[in-house]
Image 1 (cartoon, rainbow, N blue to C red):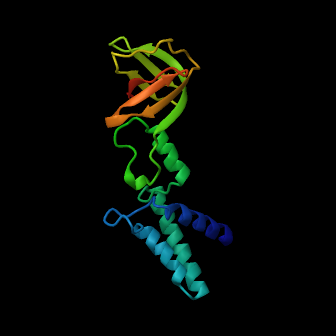
Image 2 (cartoon, rainbow, N blue to C red):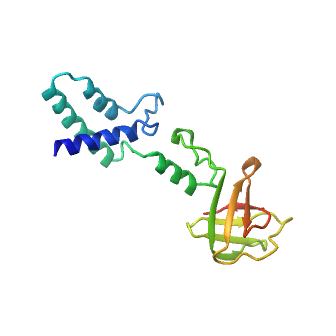
Image 3 (cartoon, one colour):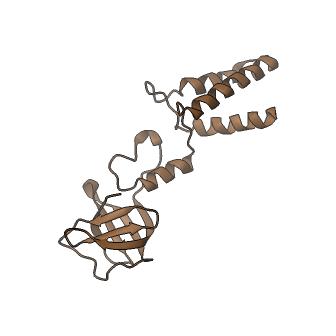
Length: 173
């Protein structure tokens, strides 16, 4: 049982130590709950070290349950960045993930906005609204069409539907 707990702690340390849980005052230092847990490694007496781990894993578990400490792995960071693609400011530096420049998806539904442009609901739930009156999509988007959304300059995004040239869109939801 204790070996399983220590293995879980080791896995948590690997995830938490990968630039995800950081102190607000010093981004290079882990939060206090994690620092106390890591300090248990330096206890030389076996029984005292185990007692330290027991105490600090309980404290860490409580901090995670209260959401005082949030642990996320690199794949979780990628997923947050992908789901937030198109929203200003969501790809935050402390997430430490790579900058997402493009996403691929499929059209789940198509409608029109007030300006007569397309509104695309993607299968992942994201909604994109055309905001480029000067360019249009030649062949009307249909459910199931593949889309490629690329980041443009100055916060713009270009949506290419079924291999057609990209047109400016804005993420609305």
